[in-house]
Image (tube, rainbow, N blue to C red):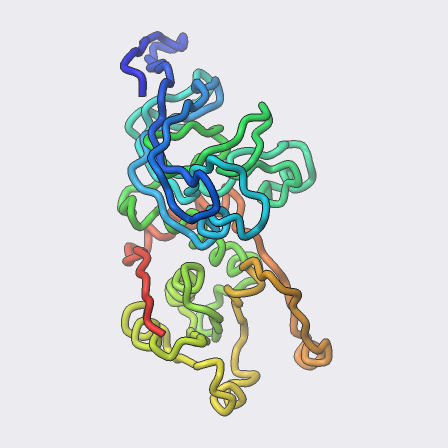
Amino acid sequence: MANKAERHTDGSGEYIVRLAHDACVGYAALDSSGQLSPFCFVRRATGQDDVAFKVTHCGIRHTDLHQIRNEWKRSVYPMVPGHEIVGIVIEVGLKVSTFRIGDRVGVGCRVRSCGECKACQKKAEQFCAKGVFTYNAVDMDETITYGGYSSHMVANVKFVVRIPDGLPSDAAAPLLVAGITAYSPMRHFGMVENGKHLGVVGLGGVGHMAVKFGKAFGLKVTVISSSPGKEKEAKELLGADEFLVSSDKGAMQRASNTLDYILDTMVFVGVPDKPFAFNATSLIYGRKLVAGSLVGSIQETQEMLDLCAEKGENWKMSVSSEP
């Protein structure tokens, strides 16, 4: 940040600090090697509808690895990754009334949408065809967006959420993508009925959150994983009730038709690199539904964060490399 600042009133007696944004220090991928290097760049000046904040925490997602390594063949270098961003407000635009300097805030995987399409009008801006991702995207001013592996961030207030008291910043960061990716479909499809049985396929970042939300909603949770070594983690750390190894055909057969919902974090809320096929006959009996999901709206994200703070549970992400 620059060391220059002005203080002036917005007409109501409330002083706003106006900072000149100079060099932002971050870590960037300069090529597809997967390595990150120190990188200096310039953030835009805080606009009237913007919030600027010092970054204190930023999660890492597998999406970041895909992008850094150009595995999706659309990476632009230099690239500053990171889209689970939490920090402290250092400046607000003149039209911003919902945040003040010193507030804890977060930004997820999108920083802009058109505001006019049906999705935006329904407060489902994550489906906006003109949406702008937090990094490795072209913003509406034709500049490349840079993510949260940086000293500070500037974002439109519509895409900034408040981190509630009682929710630690290091726990809040993973909720902004992994958490909302699990929470949104669970809420939308009614996977919140106490006593129902939820199956969670995959125990990565989204799977962790799905188990935690399932237990918070009072569901019985069964984890289905290809990694036998994750059973202890699933049951003892996350509170899962049952654990199935997907390669155990007998156990999988016995569990058939015992689940009310299945949240497949590997395919339906993930981004597979190969087409997915299934027999439609398997859907007919029981009137089963198959659907996809894409993170969640800003409104849902704030609702989720408030719920997590209210529950007061340990929402911190854990990582396991066991086979």
